Image (cartoon, rainbow over all chains, first blue to last red):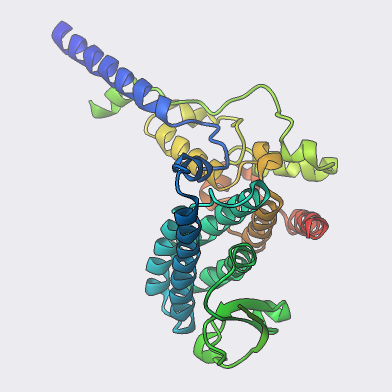
Amino acid sequence: MKTVKRIIGTMALAAIMVLTVSCKDGNKNEPAAPMSNEMHQESMDDKDNMAMNDNQDAKAILQDYFKLKDALVETNNDKAKQLGATLASTLGSFDASSYSDNEQQELKDILEDAIEHAEHISESDMAHQREHFKILSKDVTDMVAITGTEMKIYEQFCPMYKNNEGGAWLSMNEEIRNPYFGDKMLKCGKVQREIN
Amino acid sequence: MALIVIQFFPITLNESDTVPQSDFMVENQVPATIKNRLQVSCYDCHSNNTDYPWYSKIQPAAWYLEDHIQEGKDELNFNEWAEYSDRRKNSKLRSIISQIEEDKMPLDSYTLIHKDAILSDEDKRVIIDYMKALKDSLE
């Protein structure tokens, strides 16, 4: 009996030690800025290169965003989940170090918010994916306002989404393909603005 | 046997004596009735201070709770409200509104034991109206 007690005691003690160590990593009050550190860790030695990379970063985000949009147009829940996860990681690798302090702050806010929406899209049903996509679209639009874009983009708008609250999105094509309704109302919407 | 052993596993308690300056209630002058509702129905999982129920002393319930609380706080921590950018506040408010509207929050598994956390239709209306007004003021 004594041995059993000792074994249990040792096991519990070992477990406590393991947990104490692992709990230290799980910071309770994690600041709401998971991306900021990474962004500043990059070296700043080649400014020109940086600027080019940033453009590439923004371009990569747009490309993944458009793929996600197309999955929503197709009303393909699983595909949108995957593409949401992809977009979240692309957003996470954006390097903002070549932008001004103000722009960096703004980009950090935008990316943080966008990542959260992309992550939600990776684990939600169709209706929620579309809700998050609406805000994600605003984030990406605001990002483009800072980074600019080489390719021509159309901002499109469907006034009927969410009981006539309306919803905007970005597309590379002028032709309307509605990501909020899919084939229920594939062509509902109009071009609101051309961004170049 | 396993059940006895796991009783010795400690958990990190989500408890804090002070309300930080960044708290939702501090930043926004929240009316007392709404403040009370939010504290009872939301703060156990969405703040740094949980009012632990008796079963939290028993494993594996404690682990289950710890997990839920961590997840809840990652999603929304009312104590850190002021630290969110306006953009994120907007997103959070939007989610708060839709989660309550759709009866997704508070979780059924939570209200099953915390009957006082159940939001009446009137509670929901008042909270949603308040959150909508707050959201409009940010835009």
